[in-house]
Structures are given as structure tokens and as C-alpha cells.
Amino acid sequence: MPEHINDPDFALIQAMAGGDVSALNELYTRHGANILNYLTSLLHERTLAEEVLQDVMLAAWEHAANFRGESKVRTWLLTIARHRAINTQRRAAPDFVPLDESTYTADTTPLEKVERKNQRQALQAAIQQLPPFHQEILVLIFYHQLSGPEVAEVLGVTVGTVKSRLHRAKEMLRRVMLSMGENTNAQ
Image (cartoon, rainbow, N blue to C red; front, side, top):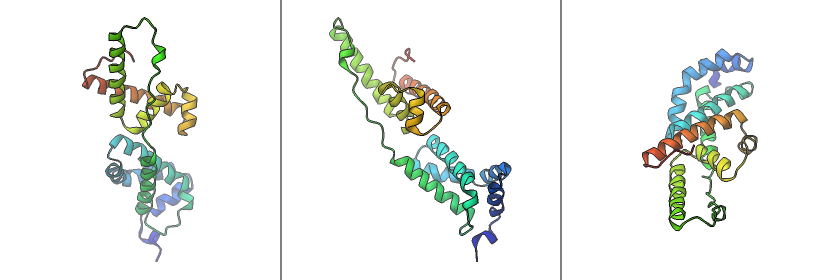
């Protein structure tokens, strides 16, 4: 007996396949909190889990027409969530490239060199406390000096997403630096 016969969510999937956005909203209302809890338990980071949840719901919207009802909709959604979480975890934390010491002028005093080295180390430690997707965007922009459109291409997101992630990453970095007792005058 096909699962969709006993699944009240199957009608929502069919409506989504026909382009009904209200069906997507209803599906999110019914299952969003549970999927978010599941993703948070997998990823150990609520902010990241929230982003992945949005990806899950987008995937459900895009693939609603392909859902055959061989499982309950909730199971299908959790399967998508699991795959998205695994893919998210596979992304390695970005490697830090040491800043080029030659960028400092010859008139830099030994004390200034030590202070700059300490600032770089504090900045790297603070960045490493951020979620991986915030680390990645900061590293691509500030260490690899990519432009917004270049970062968007690397990450496979829109330029608007890059801008919003960068804004959130810088704000989180500022808060981490303040909690570490570091000066955040340079933004």
C-alpha cells in the first residue's frame, strides 16, 4: 500500500508541484521546527542548521513533481535534510594563509612587528570561532582578496547572499573580538 494514501502531506506536495506557494508555506509550518531540530543535532550549530533548512525547503519545492509517494513526506524531507547536512559538513574549514611579512615597511620597529603579529594571531583565533560558512566568506574576501561576484561564483550563491553573509560574518567577528578583549576599530 503506497505511503501517500495515509499521508496528509502528500496533497501539499502535489499542490507544490503545481506551483502553489501556500502549500510550501504549510509544509514548512508542519515540519520546519522538527527538521531544524534534526539539522541542529547533526550540525551542532543553529545558524548553519537554519541555512540548511532553507536549502531543504527549496529542494522540496524544486523536486515536488518528482515525489512518488513511496515514503511519507516527512521521511522524504528528513532524507533531503540529512544529505544536505552531510554535504555541508564535508566542506573543509578554510586554511589560513599567513599574511605576507613583506607588506610591512622597513621602518617598522620590532615592537610594531610583534604587535601586528599578535593582532594577526588574535584575528585568526577569532575567525576560527565563527561558523564555517562565515569563516569561508571572510577568508575568500580578506585573505584571498576575491570580489563579491568572484566569491558568489566560488560558493555557488548570489552576490546578495555573499553581501548578507559577509555582513553577518563581520558582525559576529566584531563580537568575538570584543569578547576576547581585542580592539575592533578596523572594520
